[in-house]
Structures are given as structure tokens and as C-alpha cells.
Length: 212
Image (tube, rainbow, N blue to C red):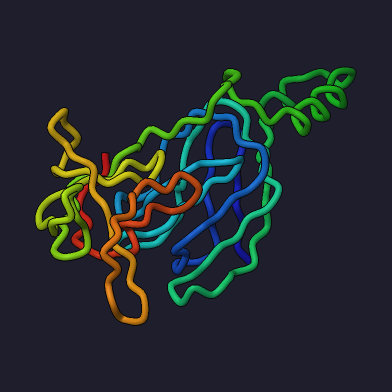
């Protein structure tokens, strides 16, 4: 049985060497620092944290955080996209309990169970990795004039927006996709911006290299 441990500003998962994706739901108001491999992307939106692969590897260490995280449910998938059973374990600060006297121990233990905030209060959830850099497009992305774009691009994880250039600069241009219907490409340009879901460009392929 897999176990997801979180608390004291850290979140890890144990119990398998074939963990490829995780979706965490609950209360998320935290400043999150991704600690898993650069071959994985971490996105946090709408009180959820999603971690999914863009390369090889498996998950163990997930992220550190400051703020409040209260995990209510978790979905874990393996390399075959099969769901794996997982238990959620909230880690308490045992040293604080050990240093307490007998009169305060019950109160402190109850406070620790109820307290899901680490270090400081955070009003808006942020993730330290906001851009996937050094992607490469051959035929799947388009410029605003409708011409095919072939070259380096990057993805803004906040809203899934793709832009030209391996890194973001003031010269970066927005990129677009076209919808495939019955094996034919429709001529209408669609924005890559997709704030409610996983960035559309990640499903289109290309070489995944470095995340910033």
C-alpha cells in the first residue's frame, strides 16, 4: 500500500518504484517548491496539486511548502495509467510533543492534529516552477498569421500559454493550435491558453528538456 506523507513543510510518497502521476485535492494555500525531478511538472489550481511526467522517471519526493495544506484525497497512477491505492498520512511535530509537560501534552497534540499551517499564512498559492523551457515544435503549433511554427518554444504553467523562444523574453510571441476533426485540420486558430486544465501543448509532443 502506498503512503503519502505530508506536514512540517514537506510532502513525499513511498511504497512503489512505479509512481508516474499524482493528483492531490483538499485545501491548498501555500508557497510550493517542487522537489521532484525536472521530468515532472507540478501545477496547483483550485485547491488541487497535479504532478505528471514529461519524461522518464518516477516520483518519491514531491514538494516542500510554506502555508496551509490539508489533503483530503489523492489519486496515484503508475506507468500503465492504472490507479494505485494510497493512504494519506499527516505528519505531526513529535519533538514538540516530547518536549511538552504532561499537563500540556493533550492540548498540544490536539493543536498539532488540527493545525495544517507551516511557518506562515499564504493568501495565494504559488509554485516556484512556472515555465517549461526548451520545448521544440515541428508541425503542431502556429503563429498568429496562421503559418506553421517550427522551432523552440516555452509553456507558461499558470495558464498553459505557449510562446516562441526557448525562454521567455519581451520578443516572445503567442502560439496557437488547430483542431483535428475526422483526420482533417480545421483552419481556425485556437489559443494554447487553457487555465483550467493541463497545458494543451504538453499533449502535442515535442522534445522536453528543461524546466525553470
